[in-house]
Length: 213
Image 1 (cartoon, rainbow, N blue to C red):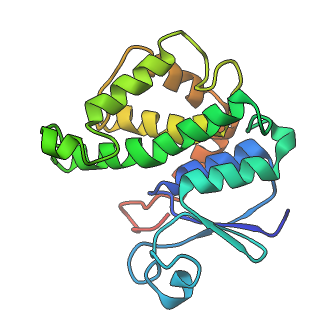
Image 2 (spheres, rainbow, N blue to C red; image 1 turned 90 degrees about the vertical axis):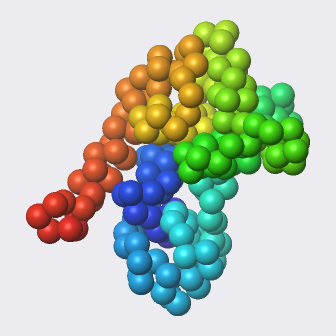
């Protein structure tokens, strides 16, 4: 598995992808792609035509989008127990909430943070997430039964991706708080793999003195 290469930047959603790599325990190489000309270069666009990070390269396979990366890596490392068995209700819940994160949480939070009001009936009915409050309510209901992790008793890749979004939303106040969010995020932040990944990315953050990590 040494041929796994993660293209990322410490100031991006790539932090969740690195966390996923650390949870999976697979050997990987990380290549930092700088914002600006490098990320939009022809060389990098040959990997991700969007000119965005993260991207995961595994031999001849290229996977972009954090939800897809987390799912792909979970399937590569079944021994890590980050994805439920195929054909089970838990696997269905895995896909449901993983793609709820991609299809509702990410765009809903982004729109709200830009001041876009989606609450009017003509808008609400045309977009997948409705409003950011509806997104927060749905997540709050999921955690209302006191479950430790989003799928229940077992930590999974959904907690890396969707849990990471909840953590970012609380940190930057872009996701409305709901009961259970803070305790859930505290459990996430106590995971050794999350702490390892965060330490690596934090050390790569630009500094005021040099402008580089």
